[in-house]
Image (cartoon, rainbow, N blue to C red; front, side, top):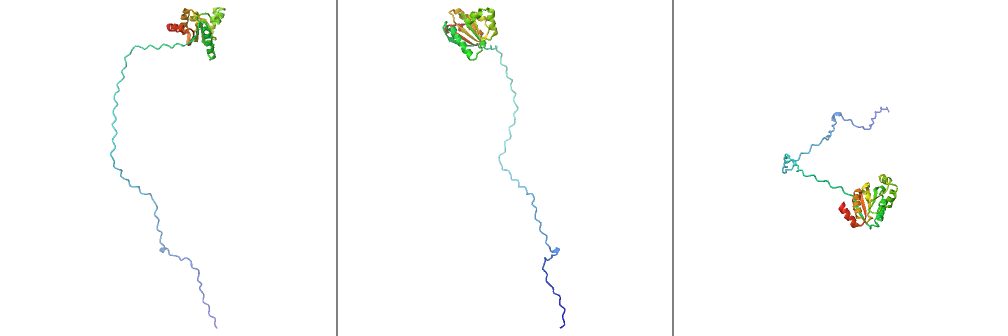
Length: 210
């Protein structure tokens, strides 16, 4: 038998994406871009009573000048305070011992020896008797040095120099000697006057002479 030519076979290929013509594509719709929000509407204020107007400033009044007070007589200044007075009761025989005890207490409390003057209205202190035996010049020179306790007779009180503390021993029966020595001792004491003796006699003298 004669051979017939074979017809070419057509094989189906895998289907791919079908191309769509450009004219048939639909353009995507653009999304709206967010923008600034509109401002909130202004709310009308609440009605209320009107505020009172500030008070008008007053013009300052003229201040009347102060009238000077009539000048009067000048007031005298108060007298300077004197020394503190301390009274130690003692008999005429024990007044010198009481003065020595008062001196020891002062020195033990820290008072410098050169700050103290001791006066006697009767018999002289043994130290004064001893120093006067070398002459008055050397005796008074020790007072001028001012580095130790100085003892003097009440009759010499006017010549004694001023010291912060003065101790007076009323160790005699002579009332006139005490009346002379105590007022002078008061003027020689800077801050403290210690008097050892009969309280009645001392108060009578200081009350009349100071």
